[in-house]
Image (cartoon, rainbow, N blue to C red):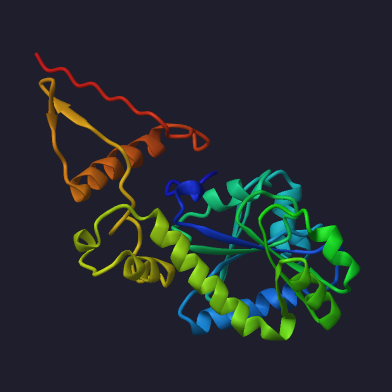
Length: 266
């Protein structure tokens, strides 16, 4: 069952960074853990999405018994954590859209070949630079091999040693702020802030959510065939009410593109 509070990945307010490789066991998880630790120090708690070929249920005990009995959605809870097991989803975009809360930054391990977000490639040797060069959204190449890093730099790619994860985390932070700032169309004063950069940083750190200060989308309200002019705050509030209602009455897979509401009172 998809959550009711789905957000739209492609609104520009969710930044995705895929950690990929041309072969397994090259340090993707190690890099992801280092980046997560450094981003936490910067005040950002990324959502982690792991793509794996192993069974997720292997270590979930009784939950596996329910799954094999035919249950499609299982919630495993204890006083310290909660795990939700559901039916598989086809794409990285679909997975992110079904996270039940606003997600400003996602680190996805795997999903090689996806056209979502920026790709960070982990390689072991210089020859792998050529193999990874065509990856969609390739942003950084990282390696423990200095020659591989030097070759990537010579070919015009951003490249770092894995030991420079702190620098890469800072680059992710600055890039995410830039992406989110570019997606914000409301005047900063409406949010009580001085700049879009300030709004973006607070969204990224989870201090505010888009529902408190969100991207304005097109809406026109007519009453008795006359246009009622709405400021950004009122327009966003009206959109929120309409979308919230529709997400409760339409299938979760429905894309809300063009909406027309008519109300006639005699």
